[in-house]
Amino acid sequence: MSGLERPESSLETDEVTDPWHLQKQTAKTYDRIASEYEQSTLTASPAVAQLREWLVAHIDGGGIILDLGCGPGRDVAWFRSRGCTAVGVDRSPTMAAKTAARGPAVEADLTSLPIASSSVRGVWSAASLLHVPSPLLGATLREWHRVLEPAGALALTTSSGGTEGLEVVPYAPERGPRSSAQLDRWFANHDENALHAALIDAGFVIDSFLHRQGHVMWIDVLALK
Image (tube, rainbow, N blue to C red):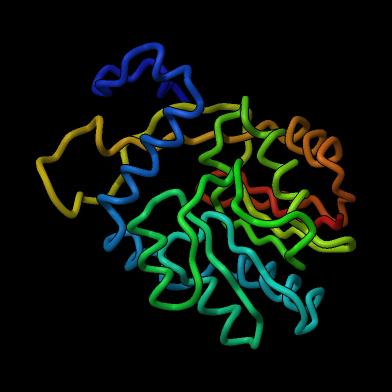
């Protein structure tokens, strides 16, 4: 991906290399496209649906599932329909507000969770780790490991490939003038070896690490604390 050099972005060079700024920029973009994004992601893919089933089976009706990068709350609603206690977390206040209409939601950064250590049974991440810049990958996974109970479970799906950069979203903004700078998202297609190593370094025991080809190469991960 050549997004780091894309001329239509108004981000300054130092901003493009600042992982914290990139996450903030991506959240602002999701604020602007929240409704159209919600309509385009109403149905989970078969692979994501299978991952959800695995996590529910592991939780077995007990404890909390934390949906990290919950977006408009599709999966929070699904987990709750299955009798689980699900809580959404999203950096975008608009996305968090949409989730709050379906169940509990918190506006927070995925690398610094306002959640007590060892307090949730499951962590769910559907296409949210791909917005975490690679310099923050290890710290983010360590934070996810921190909030899990002993023997808790992580289920995630993310893109792979070892490239990252800015991409213009394919959705129209909800308000304000159209601006390429306001409609950028940072995509980190994490290198699969780096992701595997980061999960191990964070303390996870990997149960399954599977490749799946879609419009990009996906990795579906099932792991235990």
